[in-house]
Length: 221
Picture 1 (cartoon, rainbow, N blue to C red):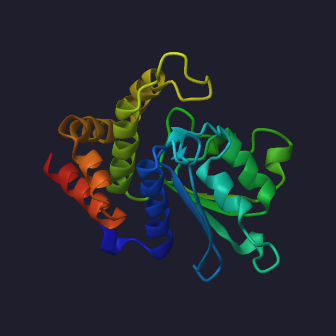
Picture 2: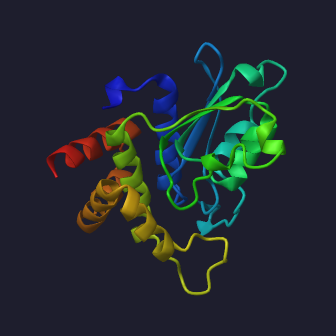
């Protein structure tokens, strides 16, 4: 699978895997210019562990798309000709950020049936003003793989008692995902049960190896 991906998608998935490895929600995003060159990148940092104590830093607004858009250099890049690539369908926060950033196109590799908000475009007078091009998932196999990573993360990091309310309520999310992307949920449950993805993290496996490994598991069951 990896060899068939364009460079922006590869970078996007590298950021997704980096977020997972840092203990945060596995979402990655990049901005590419009109030539397809990556000019900004980001990953979800909402719950990363950092510092000498490796304590979780709760930053509920540090979403991948926000991180990527916030590092875009407007003095050298025309946002109107840029494309935002994100591993997962943007939530309301990230859709709003994209809309106000000047970027006129976004592409996402996996739907988010729970929080995905691409359908908000055109629903208010303001959200009808700008011509935003949206390219939804083009590869069911890639969508399955990305969903599996998110599901495995959710099962490995269940909502602790008393945790900040900004943390996703996974027990509400997973059933919704299962209705729309059942193959991704089943794959995520399977790799959680075997501990395979966690072993990939512990051995510093590159994103390419992880994506190809999950793709193979999706095909073979």
